[in-house]
Length: 119
Length: 110
Image 1 (tube, each protein chain N blue to C red):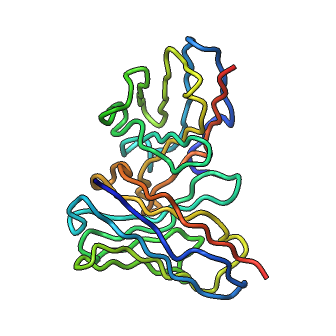
Image 2: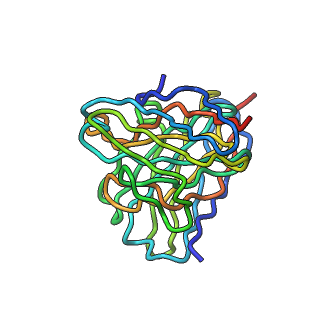
């Protein structure tokens, strides 16, 4: 079935790095744009980053620009998020999400992976 | 502070009709389609309404969406206890080159 499964979350100290991964299955991964969306504890949803279906275009939220890098491997059906210089305010559940169409809706979401930035 | 504005809470009794508003600007709702997501407690968000007023397969027709100018709304008729959840509107923003969300509306079924 159509599925997204995130991994790689954990506890990291401020200033540290973490790499999240998202494994896709059940749909032609190489044909769709993908996003990362996060949700801080008790807060709302915040868009983090986007990568075009072929990896040629990437957009980032101002809050993570220059610190986070989104990438994908269409041969392995995986999406990654490299997070550097982590701050306490990056603490959140991170979801990967499939974009159904350009400027469209997130039609498939993963279950999320928790990232805690704390000393 | 979210780019799209939603009321933080809404409530209704079983069987009632409830609406949730979402206000934006010309760079997001005014020029792009609106999508709505439902997040049940402790779970990942789920697509509820896409392209302003379309329901994905499996979403009951009690849920409907509309858009006018720079605002949108989600209506839930025949309210049920299982509708108790957080609801988020979202749209692409041409100025920010990213997706913007509303702050979310917590729906309580009394």
